[in-house]
Length: 244
Image (tube, rainbow, N blue to C red; front, side, top):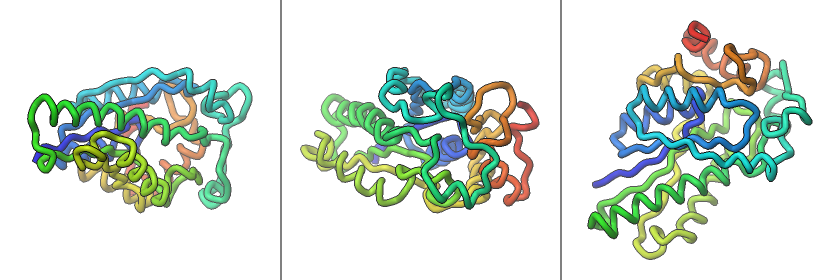
């Protein structure tokens, strides 16, 4: 069985854990980082370092025009919208905050699926891999437990997207090879994710989760607070803070 995989790698704790997990599972793994016009490039540099440490093929895709379309977000228009800060985890799950980027994961999955389908079609039509001996899977670090209330981090969303990709792809309709979406963190707490990251050898010291740029995490945004909660509950120090 030939196992093609693509991981959407942001450079943060969660996506780095997923990348290390997928690599351990034996996929021919391509990492894709999307520069979508976010407020800073710090996470992109972390993604480069993570991909290099894991020995992954890595592409940074520049679609920075997306910030002009998905403009109603503190991550794409920080000069217009203030980042939420110092919120309790319970408060984070009560609404969809301004750090939500309209349809970002839908866009990312479409980009990733286009590349993965191209790789799969090449394997089928040029290299002669039989459809029955091919897997094609997109790995994304969605989480529906300790998260900031995003609608595109929920299991029902991914079930719908998988069917859309099957119906809309040559790979799914002609060859019967589904473009599956793997969400291995969907039902895990941040503490669970930290423990898994250590188990699979994720280079956590290279990761960046903060919504701000700079040399050290702000410690106040939702992402920083959730990350700190995870390490605290796992009873482990955050190695990124030691080198930041």
